[in-house]
Amino acid sequence: MSLAIPPSPAAESDPPSSVEAVSPRSIIEADSEPSDGAESCDTSTKSVNQSIFDFIRENGRTYHRYQAGTYMFPNDQSENERLDLQYEIIKVLFKGRNFYAPLKDPKKILDIGTGTGKWAIEMGNQFPNCEVTGTDLSPIQPEWVPNNVKFVIDDANEEDWMIAPDSHDYIHTRILLGCFEDFREIIKKSFRCLKPGGYMESQEYMPTVYCDDGTMGPDYAFAEWTATQDKAAMTLGRPLRIANKLKRWYEQAGFVDVHEEIYKLPVNSWPKDPQFKMLGRFTESNLLDGLQAFSLQLFQKGLGWTKDEIEVYLVHVRKAISDRNVHAYHKIYVVWGRKPEKEEASAS
Image (cartoon, rainbow, N blue to C red; front, side):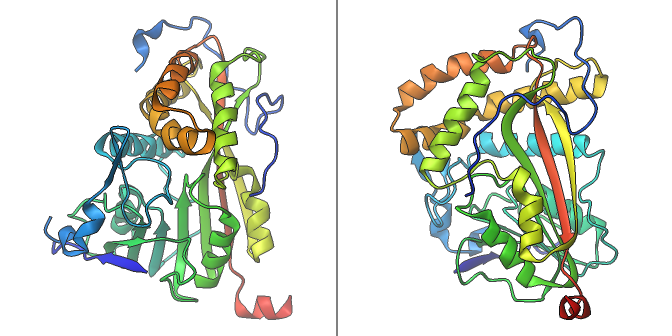
């Protein structure tokens, strides 16, 4: 089942690790003088079934109504603003690129889990002759969008997924960890729905906290929170550690010419390099703004914690995130692959 929002007129599990000696890219040099904490940081849409706008209220946050409980994180204004900041952070990290697959003249693009729709809108502007569709469980996208962009309320988990086989030139996902019981199923569906020669691309966040220089001790509260979050997610059947498996899953699904790029994203402004310092500063803000959202439903439903227990626990986690003496970072994976042409598939 899916609900279209008309355009406006104009498990696999592996043990979470915490320290990695060899980095995917060159070592980030830490700033020799870490600073103190002062641096921290209607009408068209309403035409769909009105009930999907009656969001579920829980713990002072709102959550999606359509397929309630499928997505464990809020959809309220503060979370949407955090998602927009996250989008800008990734854009800078990728040096302005929205995609890595070698797109030439795509006619149909699908963005699974589009969120606030910023990526879909930018792609619509970049490819004005292409039909760009963004799907999500929440109707949180803007009303005024390019004429070639539309948003649809849809659940990619469903068996009767709305996308026709061999219909799209490019399918995109970004930061969907914890959204699916088995992301391999999304890859398989996407493979089926791509035209021969079409591309799929996933830009994914690895929640494991890494450190290259030994400054992160075994008692680092943010790494401990990550392990706790991972335990809760696995209990609920919503794996978080999928980024490092994507390349293998793409190949297993039948994609060819599969590529992988890995980027480092500092947890806070500990790096010396000005751009990494800026990225770290905004990432710190993003993490602090989202920490409650990342914890509430997972810890309550997966571990049985109360809201008060969670809030007390997060006090030390927030301090750890802002500790510039710990040179911690996350990895962002970019994986893309091509669906073989018919003659390639026949030959293989």
